[in-house]
Image (cartoon, rainbow, N blue to C red; front, side, top):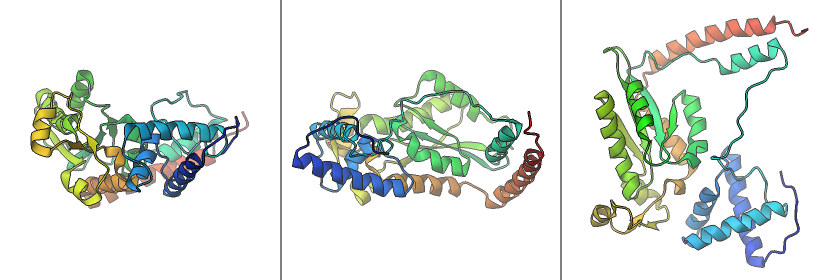
Length: 293
């Protein structure tokens, strides 16, 4: 929705930037993705529309702020995934809540599987990219927000702890930046889980060097103030790469590929059949619910 709240005078170069940003926004909305400002920026860098510089990123942010205020860019087209209004659910009548339950009902389909996958991602800003595919696969996902806290890692260790040999083995698919800290985060997750539960199957699925070589995301200078930088620079050089620069569709496909690689399809189909039986019962209850209250 485009709503004009203020008059703005734009230079021709700014109008061109707004037009190009709107084209990228429309392209990804058609795929079902709402991008963050940083994702829009990296798409513009990848298409040689902007230089890969911090000042260019800040300038784009200011331009798109004014573009929205002037009614040139859709207000719903740029997502802030860190500031969300939270409230309790409300219902119109008993039938309404039962119909909602029908839509939300799931059984624990991974319970009888050999593996229990989870998707862990470094950045909260990318949760909107992984949420749809994780929901479709009925897989838990977790935003580490950098290095995860001790409390969160301990709780993860308790969840991963297997009570007996028949319990599914937890496997964590981890995604983070390719930089001194981002690479080290995978190691940190693995070692702390081993400490808390004696077991850790942590698989880094992005970013990786083969992905960087294949998709050529824009590089950034490695943060030399990071204590891990000297070892990183000796091994990989002075460039680093951000997860945000990958195509959202590629990230979703990558997660789906790895989750399906550990899923037993025969067991999954049996669980789906049971789930559908339960849903049929709920649908019948919803259809017969009294709304005259």
